[in-house]
Image (tube, rainbow, N blue to C red):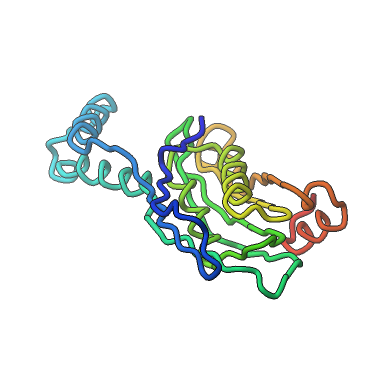
Amino acid sequence: PRRPSRVTITDVSPEPPGPHLELICGRTDIDLARAERAVAELLQALGQDPTDEHTRDTPRRVAAAYAELLTPRSFNLTTFPNDERYDELVLARDIPFHSLCQHHLLPFKGVAHVGYLPGGRILGLSKLAWVVELFARGLQVQERLTTQVADWLQGQLAPKGVGVVMEAEHLWMSLRGVQAAGSRTVTSSLHGLLRSDQRSRAELFALTGVRP
């Protein structure tokens, strides 16, 4: 499922001719006390003693850790008019990210390559990494995460094209089951010219170093 409630845009006034600033708030409702009780129950179910000196504070630590992993940080989205009419690819490569698998509650982590072909406005470069975190800090599957980042950038910037490629190792696959340590899953989501124009598409994948 999509999570539109996690994005709050506080500035809805008409777009000015200069820099445009929007506050993007990532929020989630977490009941820490209830989470601590659940971790204590889990420890007992796994045959562990939650009153032991080494596990006495584990419920609090685990609850706090999951709260941090599931809560994206707020940031200011800054865009600028594309006065120079720059129309070539803008690409941020190897953006590190981590998320939690919705099916196993174990982390997956890797890098994201995020690019776009500017239209009327350009985005502050660091914001590409912030947008990745906005959607990564939650219970996710990699396919949906990739699509959400691309869809959000397409909707916010209205560029000529958007391309998002993600590479990640999933710990549920590395540590259990097939135990395929080191294997990486690659996903992509493309919009506009980066999807329909073969040369633009090839340039994106060439610069990311990922074979389409």
